[in-house]
Length: 239
Image 1 (cartoon, helix red, strand yellow):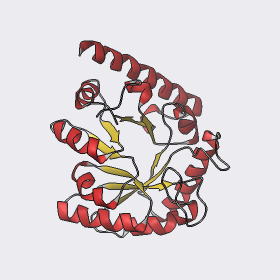
Image 2 (cartoon, one colour):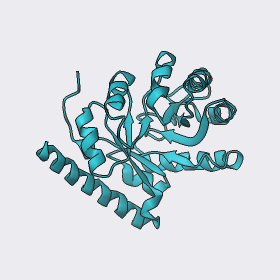
Image 3 (spheres, helix red, strand yellow):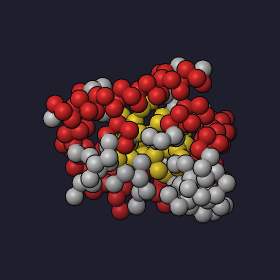
């Protein structure tokens, strides 16, 4: 366990240096960017070590892994983010532990989240996942609503009991005009965020960037970066 703690501490330090350097290069303050450590496929013991090392935001993408892990770590002061494609039959479970749902991409999901949140007495923050590879009316290959659907979906979240509209999220697309152009993709997301905040001033979160492209996200103006491999390393999947 001590070896693992040392490994995580070293990795976190390197990621912190990358974020700080990117902020400095972009003329931003380090505190403007929140690090979310994506703990998917890693055990609850790693989450505990990360908490000891100062991490306060963690993310999961599969409820079957996340629910027991969140329960095991319920004594820790953590903000749990759900970042995976979310099926409506998993919503009740996800709402029980997720403080932030970053993958809202359809009206039906908004309705399900709202009903579950009200039932549980919870008020999760919701981000609209934007698919920069999706045509009008379609969902992206990795989830997400097409850009022209942002406004309608945001209004639905803002008007739904039990939900709070937090902002936007994207995953750098593997196809379409932004494939291989991460910074351009993230800059586009920031344009959409600016428009969103005109109608919803509090929806100021912009979640973008992962281990390989966090610098591009910081340069573009992201407020949150989601880093997994660079912190936790490459390890076999659980189960």
